[in-house]
Length: 159
Ligand code: ADP
Ligand code: MG
Image (cartoon, rainbow, N blue to C red; front, top):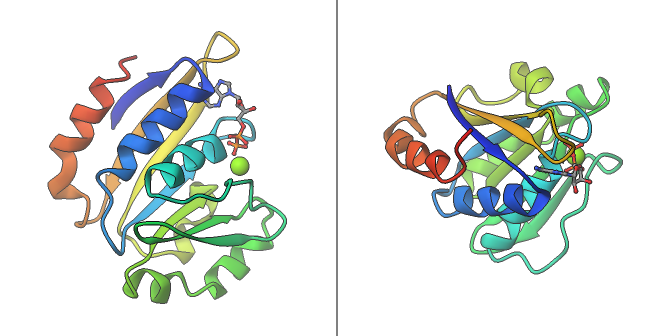
């Protein structure tokens, strides 16, 4: 587990933007953590850095939104348990195979229905209101070669 911490929403957006600079076509990133942890906030920084002009908002009630940036981005949220099956139906595989990038919130519960090759970013509330602890985990081969870059990124937001 690679650890980091942020002290504001803007910090988390900046970390998301740094992550976007490492992303490649076909990548999947799971964002896990409780409601209000900062998953959507991280997605906003990520999308902005990917060149998405539109404002990224929580996709909770629409399940998924597609944005156009340097790469096509799908931002999905499987908050409700019955969303799970629907995310399975999203055809995330096809979207990723076609060169898109996926950001999926509520990573823990949806792990069974998505490709077993992703980066997981877990966010947890810290002691102070605006503190967040992040745990980054590499699952599968596609992110493995980028471990040093991710470690270097995490060092910019030390615990
Ligand atoms: P989630 O998608 O995990 O439910 P959101 O990103 O929608 O969470 O909400 C996180 C809330 O916490 C936002 O209101 C944001 O401004 C606030 N916040 C405060 N500090 C942080 C931080 N360090 N990182 C991310 N969000 C933060
Ligand atoms: Mg959210």
